[in-house]
Image (cartoon, rainbow, N blue to C red; front, top):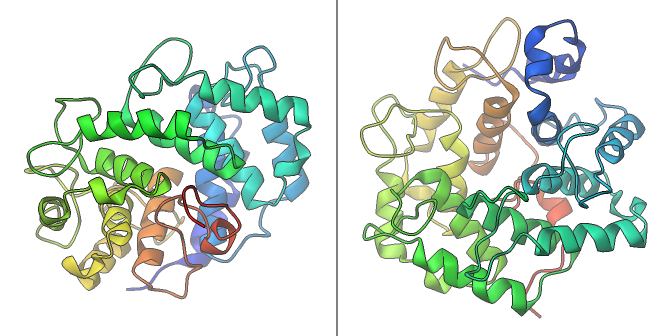
Length: 318
């Protein structure tokens, strides 16, 4: 089996052409994230010119929420920290961060910093949901913008430390169940903060390696089914910890291949399931992390092309 690169390019390219489908409008709240997933997949496949750059930037800017600052998922949607990070990642990927005037950039930074609570955690928006995902999202966004400060980083690191569990892994909030996706956001956030010294590597690396199941795929928690998205959440964490050798990479590669739609393109969570752009990105990103298929190298912390991440000033490093 092999990676169907051209089919995946075509699948992603055509995703925005389904405007007559009811599902298209039901997923408005994911549009900015979906655009980021698709663009990052295309860049990783080395098809970065597939989308019209100007049209992409125009869409991103149309999602600006001038009332609260930040970006919404779709025009006239309220801003959220997740869609804001996706917007910033897209602008950075296309080299267009400077398109934001100083007033909007300042308002964007104020929006993100304003979501941090006294305990170091971040809310997703003004409605108050708290999750370690949002800590990573806030730090990643501010890092890309070059706006990290000790006043933001230090309490965020303290909150993440409270979310570690006896098995070395991390949960959504203190005391929550360990989960591979939360491991990624916590480990990657600590990497951004230059505090990987806080990770219990002796416990966490074996826990991550145990996520590989029969058939080569990875799961997010013990006794769960494999899912292609963990080809990113688990592998990125192992990559950050320089421990990719701890899983059978060829077996995982073959699992990802079996989750492809060999007719229409795209990758699903498991073989013969419906494809989507989320799993398409993270399957391709996992293959990139393992060095397969002549893909563009992807950064395990920011989930962006490495050559672009190299231009981000790293916090706490000279």
